[in-house]
Length: 196
Image (tube, rainbow, N blue to C red; front, top):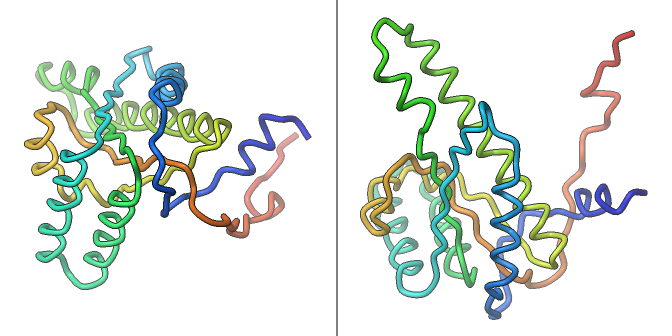
């Protein structure tokens, strides 16, 4: 099997981390991998906030405050996200600085559905960057989790970090603690159709 495919297949969602700092050099490699993702119209809509220490603790605290207001079920997922953030030595907040959609907003008579498609382009581009980062982290012996539910706390996180744009997700990053299990993958026969 090709080494890149092996790395992709070994990628896991890591929710518990060892008490060990992630070296700055490795963080830079992960961020460079993200910045080298393809993006619609080469807009490169991603923006990353790398957070450690007290600011990271404040983010997990803001998430815990927010989850008290959430409906049962979603609040437990938010609590799990806060625990993952507490466990990780570093988190990466991922933002859309909206280079395409902000330009489209200024144009009159653009149908609303077209505005939505442009925003989707940005999200697709950022998702490609996140996947690049995740594969790079795996190749470097690090683990990561994609904490999408944290977008409920966008306002609070924005205020803490003084960042403009739309929060897409938080990525927890660190050295995995314990053995990682793999969830079963759906077979190609069930999800792919080959046309002639």
